[in-house]
Structure formats: structure tokens, C-alpha cells
Length: 446
Image (cartoon, rainbow, N blue to C red; front, side, top):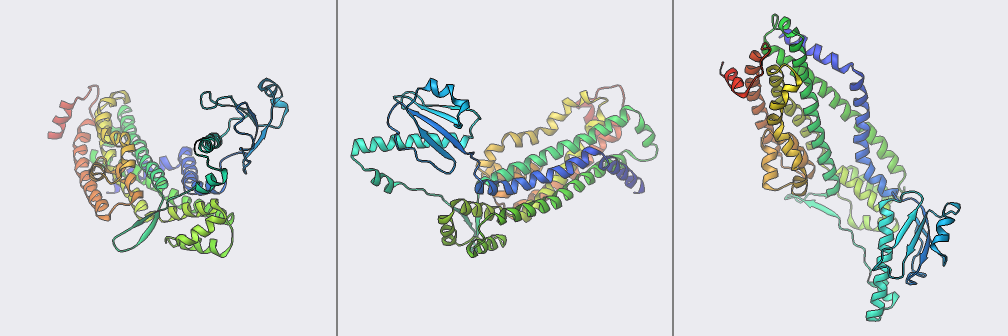
């Protein structure tokens, strides 16, 4: 046991002292926190930039119809397009919107100094489409402008999940989608990053013949186990620091964002409800949103983030990262022991990592259908559960599915470690001969 501890200590210390480990450890929590805060921040601070647009309307349909907004300011002038282009960089205009005689047949053109945001272009298109639609309604049906304004409606559907016990939680599918994709990709890269470290370490020791000296003092299985556990502890250390730092950075970001919201009693009450992971009263949100739509949207997004099943997410991420890594690290160690160079690993890596690759390839389907039968079964199947389960958890997964997947993953890890140990103890001392699948089968039978 002392020998295994020495191997674990060596593998652990040599990696946590690297600069790359320290840089990645402290930068990644900033990305985690930004992912939690950014949606609400963007809701408060619109992503559009201020645009001062010169409009050259050759159709005559938009005179007095393009009203200014907070971000868009229009100036309609009857000048030639060539002259406007010539004086463009001498003027204060950020763009020139040229509308031809028949805008439905010939597309309008926007000339710009600085690339406008996608939101700005979409709003310009919507403005022009609305004006043309109103023109057609008035001409075809004789509807007045006032009547057109009265029939306009703006509806935003709030999604709330209600369970069998009557509990309710606000849900924001876009946030669940983004979080699920991020966590599953993180587990995917973790498994590959740390699993490949195990494989490279084995190949390096085997190539340098250091392993011949090491196995004279420890058993091959002890060496493999020590390397796997040592690198696993590196991952857990990094993961723990990520969770702690992410909570700190997210708390700072949330405090800053809250300070930017109105400090009236309604806003404070809604924020208190959200911090307690309760669904705020719909009428209260509607009343506040009526005064400030951005604030209402920001509060809804913050409430959706806080109402996510964070206990399941944190447990699932730590557990499936750890045992997913242990499972594949044992297989990577077996591959490293069976070859002499990294180039020879390709024939073995692809079949081993195929379940993980398949999970990533099918990610879009699982995101769109998180409760489909295929998604449920692949989130339980041990070789794909580390990826697919993390994709599904933000949408809400019953505890029994998580526990079943966890039990099967642990059982598969133990079985695969036993198989990998049989390959490792033979292959670690084999030199100068490329191992085949037939050869590996023989090693398993020794």
C-alpha cells in the first residue's frame, strides 16, 4: 500500500506544480461564472450598439414611418447614393440604408463603417417588413394606422415545471441547453485530457525503460493503479478549485448585476423569492416588466438559473467526471502498455473512445429530446453515461436514473480495471512487437 501511495504522490505533485495546471485552474472558473451571469447581464445591457443611419428612400413608402428607438436613429434625406457614399466617412452616420424603388423585388442595402450586430440588422429588417405589411393592409382592407396599432401584440411565454407534489420551478430551456452542453463537453475533454496523460506516461516510462526498474520494486497492477489514482486526484483538485472559485466569481457577478437593477420593494421581493428557488408571483413579474421590460426579463433569467437542480448538477458532474475518467483511464493505461510509440495507439484508441465520440455527435438530438428513450438509455449505459447524463441533468432527471447510471458505471469501472490490469501486466514489458487484437486476447487469458 505504501508503494502505491508513493506512486500517487509522484504523479500528483509533478502535475499540480506545472504552470499550465495553475493557469487553467484559475481561468476556467471565470468562464463558468460568465456562463451563469452573462445571459442576465445581456438582458439588462442590450447587445446592440448605437446606430445613426442615413436613409435614402427611393420607394417613398417609408417617409415618417421609421421612428427612432434607444439604439437606432434614422435620418431620411433625399440625396443621391453616390454623394452619400462620398461623404460617408466625413459624416457622423454609422450606416447608409438604401431602399430601392421596389424593396420587395430588389433588396435594400446597408452600407456601414463598422460591422453592425446581428440584432441591429434583424431589427432593421423587421422595421421595413412591418411598414410594408401596414401599407398592404391599408391598401387592401382600408385599415387605419390606429387600428393596425391596436391589433399588434407582444407575447412572451414563461415556462414553469409543475411536479406531482404541486411544486413549481421556473425553467429557461436555453439556459439548460447551454449548461448541459458545456458540462458534457467539459466531462468529454476531462476524460480525454487526463486519460491521455495516463497513456503518455505509460508509453514514456516504457520507452525509456524506466518501467523495468519500477516493476522490480512494485507490481505492474500497483503501478497502473497508482498512476490512475494520482492523476484522478489532480483532476479532483482542479475540479474542487473550479467549483469554489466559480461560486465566488458568480456571487460577485450576481451582486454586481443585482446592484444594477431597480432597488424598489418589488424588485427586492422578487430577488428574495428567486434566491430561495421559488417561482415569483406572475402578476408581480408582469407589473415590474411593464415598467421595465429588460428588468423583468433579467429577473426571469436569474430565477431560471437559480432554480436549476444544482445539487444534482454538482453531484453528477463530480461523480461522472471521476468514474468516467477512472473507467477510460484504465483502458488508456492498457493501450499505453501494449504499444511502443504514440503513433501505434491509433488502432486501439478509436474503438475505445467510440462511445464518447458517438455521444458528442448525437448531442444535438439529445438536447432537443432530453427525455427520449434513446437519451434515457444512453445516459444509463456506462460507456456513454458520463456525457449523456450530464447533458440531461440540467433539464431535470429523476434520482433513480442517476443512481442506476452511477451503480452501473462503478461496476463497469471495476470490471474494466480488472481486464486492463491483465493487459497491463504483460504489455508493460513487451518491446519491439506491435500488439494486435489477437495478441491482446491472449494476454487477457493469461
